[in-house]
Image (tube, rainbow, N blue to C red; front, top):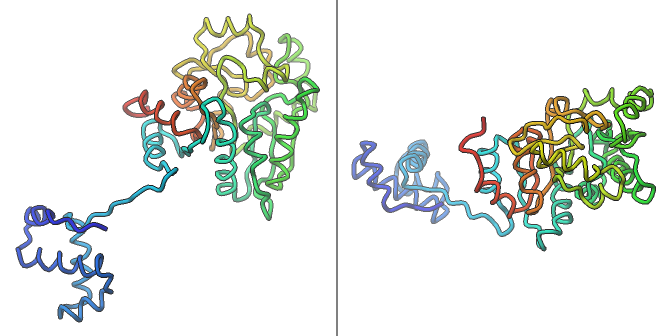
Length: 336
């Protein structure tokens, strides 16, 4: 608390006399600077304790007492609140990644682990994307909950890929399940098929359609935000787009994706023949999930992250401090 010596001018505008202002300032100093209890102040000044309380409250209202909050190093509440306001987010988590821009995964993973540990309290049905190195870093950092805090965790995009990296997608959902006590539900299909007919054939299989039937019940999704250029993990998995498909999407204005569903710079879905080959949650179903947590950072993903916010693909963002500042530099005046 600071005692503002210029607050008297404000007090006069509220119609207080010099004697009232003097008493307010004196009580404020005794309480905030000398640490006296209200009862002690009342005894020393020979006034009632209720009057002391009223004058302390009034001192704050007229500006004699002002509250100053000093943020600790590494805490960016100011940036988080600005992102929430400018992009209409339910929550933003901004962290120092403590390294080069291209190595954001460990820092974002640790921040995501803390967010999950503190916000998962029970009863959720969680969807999780399969091919995200950032999310893998998050679940590797999570401390196991003492009791079950999630009912079910289910993959929301195909989780089968190249056997050399298949273990990563399995490890991601497996670690999340063991850390939260959730029942894991795996998607026994790739995220990207070669043809629409192949996709339709797999979706008709009960083992696949049964997983998809869980998606409307999701209360939360945890997703990475991808740029048009696939990440190394996605590329190695065999679920990435071919160069020709990337060119078609780029020509259509795509800048990024969530669960292999692509969107343009304004966040609008980019519809193409690629959609017909994806086994993953569709954009409308995704955006109906109450809590949609996106984890991404770094310069390479800036356009995709901003578009995901503009298109309401996520309503919780976990990102690094540099990306938060870039987003605010290009933020809309108000979230529509």
